[in-house]
Length: 210
Image (cartoon, rainbow, N blue to C red; front, side):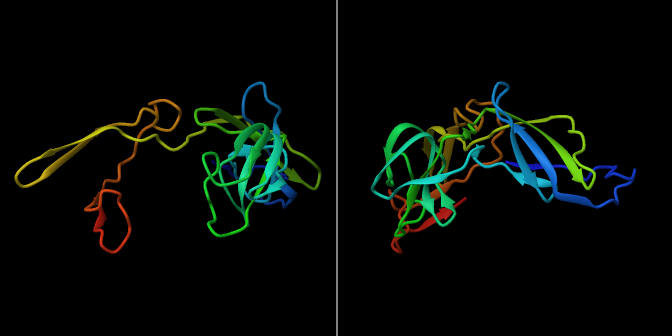
């Protein structure tokens, strides 16, 4: 999620022209009303809130080893990571049911973060920002709220009706449209057509998108 804001109207001299001081802005993010706030420094007027906030990820195992962790575990390499998974004990560090193979053919690792809060679809996130100049810290802004959105689940009950000159495809909207319920708006659908049952990308298959 991208959190953004504008430069303060008063940066210290009753104008917007006074230079701010590193780290320029501090964002306080709270995942749930009873969770500890997490402070994130930013040199610009935006921050990218990742699937987890708080704590630090550290390697707990190489691929095909077991990772012992009580917290969030991610799988990958070179800055490309799977969505974090909550683990309470140990887990096999390998592509499979828990972790997708985000970089095929590359040696990967698992990283554990025992202090992370995993952001889940439907969760409300609250944040407020303060600016920093050479005098010190300013006051926090009024809090802003956002709701974490995930990917929609598969559509329901797809069906076809064949006519002499066309085929009608129909379906029901996903049961989870992004917030863990049906309250998010689906913007549009992609319909894939293929003359291969498995939608293979091999040259003998003709696959297109409507």
